[in-house]
Amino acid sequence: MSSNRRGIIIACGMIVMAFAIPALLGRPLPPPARAAAAHLLGLGRTPTAAEIAAWDIDVRADGTGLPPGRGSVREGAAIFAESCAACHGDRGQGKPMDPLVGGLGTLTAVKPVRTVGSYWPYATTLFDFVRRAMPFDAPQSLTNDQVYAVSAYVLYLNQIVAEDTVLDAVTLPKVQMPNRDGFISPDPRPDVASSQ
Image 1 (cartoon, rainbow, N blue to C red):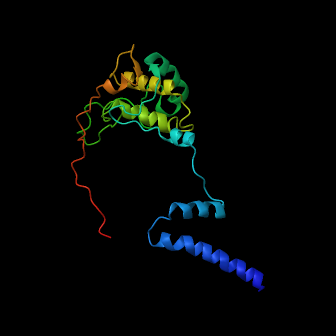
Image 2: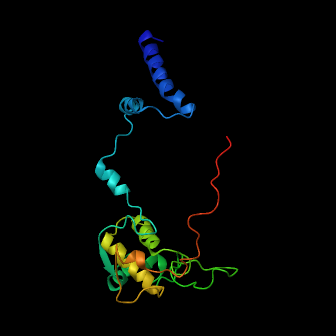
Image 3: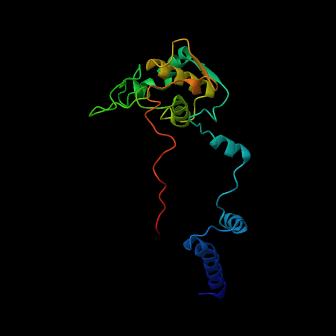
């Protein structure tokens, strides 16, 4: 083996070890080393502020994080028919995917029917889930107005809101879900730490 090739192999090995040893010891690399690794290996980059903002879409139970926008039950019916009915049925009854409506009063049954209307404690959870994950074949493709509208329609199908309801960042957190008292918050279970 030529000395030039041997030198390259040794240099590559030293670079790998410089980054591997801290990782093997369970310690993160210091920021300068992370930047050097990214540059040397051509991996990763610092996300832009716009990219971080696009990922920061969580909505809390109290409505913190809800975006501007509005949507009505009527608007939601049309969007649901186009984007949701293929999986959830034309009235949210399910097939082939889980039902979104029904199940009220079944949570103590042998086979409870857990739906948005019977199980979910907060209407804001519906908005958050639809915004992040639906429709299944095109997640995050709906506008905020469309997500408010679909949320209004699903809540209407569950007889939780009236047909003339319009939801927005102010009205959605005020919706009272049938199972709002079925969950305990904060979680009373103790935190558990690993003994290792």
